[in-house]
Length: 130
Image (cartoon, rainbow, N blue to C red; front, side, top):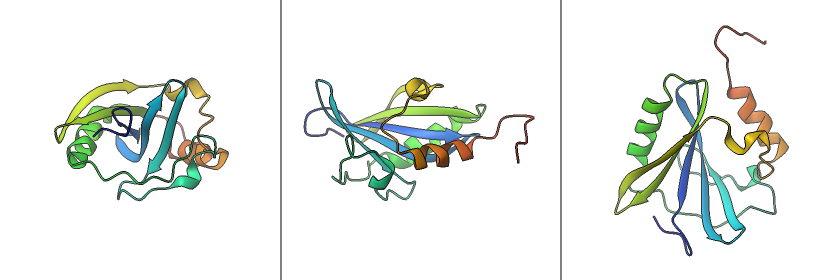
């Protein structure tokens, strides 16, 4: 799907082989970009993005969402943490990349509370921290 000024990036945050949420990047103009978070039922969760980057614009659920979700979980199956990125062109998912260190650990666009929430999803193999 195309945003007002660019393709929309659909980035599936996956933990231990399961998608948790979708980080959407839209309307890229030079250094400006709008970010939003959707849960897997496609509910916008603006409170999880810092005000500087947040958009309250609701994007329609992509036609190929179910395929993106299924393919993301297949690709993420062997990894404790990976972000699987997609575009949608003509109603079909187009693979972009897999990212193993999203934001290099400096995701200032996520609120501190959401960073904690995401971190709580991570279970490392052979580790039990609780």
